[in-house]
Image (cartoon, rainbow, N blue to C red):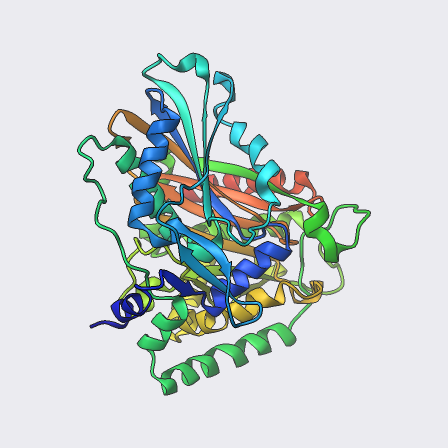
Length: 467
């Protein structure tokens, strides 16, 4: 019997599972820092009216499939500052229907999100909730605009499994047989256990040796790091989660332009993430102040998916946290290219860096210290150790264009970034359309900075595409 199923068997009677160190850290962060790390997807649909009863029924079926979605947060009975998942077969995830006007369909979710963004998760709470937006006047319109917003705590999901669960929800909603995804899933392996089962004790030690010393050397032996200038604030930055809100703007490449970008990436031997990262670095080099007397350096981080690095690989349908990272990529300000040809060359250098990090086992090594990284968020903020930019690739999502009578016209990712004092970009491709979110904590980073980032970065991508 596999370790994954052994773990499920041991917890089958109690219907409880102790949180892993990373899950504990994520829950503690979101509790103490006003919901930081909570994430979600806005599912933009066009089709017939969705009743609250319909959506509740679909959500209940999704809960029967995923134990995390029918669980409540509980305190560990014996360990201090530790938590438990407690299954409750009778629990119904909160699903709230909020009416809006027809012409608000594209942006209404962004007005509602700040009202919930800072809510912590409390003992006894579920780990997810949903919203349904539509115009009551469109009840008879077979092609009306509807939005389903699916929000989860990061402790129970990463981008891959969140998108997969949202995809399953839409299939269940449109299913007339009552059998879509009816097979319940056991609790998935935690990230720590999956890594432990993949690497031997010696392998884990060697992975850390190849990961931590180079990172420490890179951070300590360097030129001054350039960062986005802060806005004028009248509060202590150590309490930014109390005074800030998540500001996010979006850039979208339509299907035709995304196809051209993919063709360019194949031609140059790079990934879409590498091309976007090159455009981001070029944009930052044009937006941030330079030092006339000394060169400066930019550091950009990237999240990484542990699932495919584990043996056996973890399936995307396991609703769980498997987000890790690799060592940051660095480039001197003076070396950032200005031509499209040079930007593709920078993307190639970035791809070489990511491949080297992956081959060195950094994804698994970083996964072993992810809990410590989140615990550091609870300490006073130290600007000197922050990178220039953060990126998170949500990959190619499993969504399809049609779910029964509903067309999926778009998917918008979002995240609570109240402690993000440097900009962040989420990269996601859905049904051949590339969406980039540019976000962070405002007013620590002025709202105008995100707009400028988005506009210049999209222009730079267009230049690369047309090269």
